[in-house]
Length: 438
Ligand code: SDX
Figure 1 (cartoon, rainbow, N blue to C red):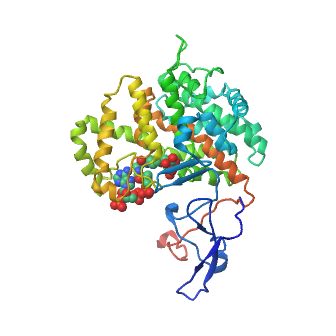
Figure 2 (cartoon, rainbow, N blue to C red):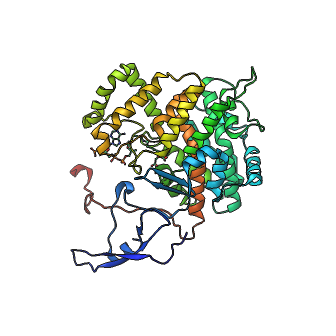
């Protein structure tokens, strides 16, 4: 969205004689102001320097707002707590895509459009067959999502709003089918086709856990929990995978390829892969002695040489409790109660570890709190999701956020291909010597 006339200015002065420069300053509707440095290089021959983008706004957006100090998360202005308790995932998808919550007829129409796209091309089974059965689900998902551009060539033109709309619906509709296919393939069971009469989350649970041998009736408590997990992961401002999708799409590539790039980035343990890493961390502590060994583990985390991190803790933006972690902990408790697992040792261990960490100055001084990944693994394990599939489910849920952010960028008349610069600290010009003289 083109920014309104400047709300003020920032004056840059230099010690090297470069003339000082006034730069426009813009205010958002909420949150930090930005200094527009687009003219900086042209006027001074200098770049800004911000590895990891700690102080850089890559765009302006109307989709998601995070206040890291307050621990606040809004999707299109609505608090995540209200969406997670009063809406379902498809309503949240509609909100993220179109900017408003749907009324009853809009919701029914959207559900109908998504439901009619849940099957994948039958040929995708043969694509899947090329993977080893023990391939990591995120390797499979990176391949399957990218392959959609080959199976659906009629909706790959990024600059055609109608084709972007079709590819958005296809992606949202087919992610559950593809994730469950990746799971069924890994356990050697037949794929389960989607059923149009089921809810989005209910359909996913059935495709995951049903077999052709008997009827499967999803447990409504688990279905609701799955739907809430989708809502909590749907979008999160300009995180690493969303920035990857934006940068990838800025080249004009097709929507499926851009979302596949987001899947690949989300896989990393510092990002979406943290839920899998967190559960494996809890398993390791449990195997080494459980609660009694928490002190030893925390000491390892504090030892910089150990390279051990408390997975599921810390966040680039949240310097307070991640509101999603609170909701995830509640969901965890509900699911464990519903399954009669209130004494689940892993949940108890996670709660003890959280309590001890939040009383330890190492974490308090660094403002390290549980993030969305800390409890999501425990609740997914309780639902019956295998650990390696956790991040694939994160990708399933985040697909709508990636699409909404991609659409917002493409619709912005000011957008250009992303092309950061650098501070070059390598060799100055030198000539090649013949090999005999090297
Ligand atoms: C997600 O960006 C998003 O919005 C992501 C996400 C989304 O919805 O898209 O919210 C999803 O990715 C959540 C984060 C999941 N990752 C983890 O749980 C992995 C563990 N967390 C860390 O790797 C880390 O906290 C990050 C990557 C999440 C954030 O890292 P930063 O902002 O770059 O902070 P940092 O690494 O510079 O850490 C600051 C200090 C360092 O100590 P000092 O050098 O100051 O002594 O805190 C320490 C770090 O060593 N630290 C941790 C820690 N996280 C940071 N120490 C122990 N355990 C941790 N988890």
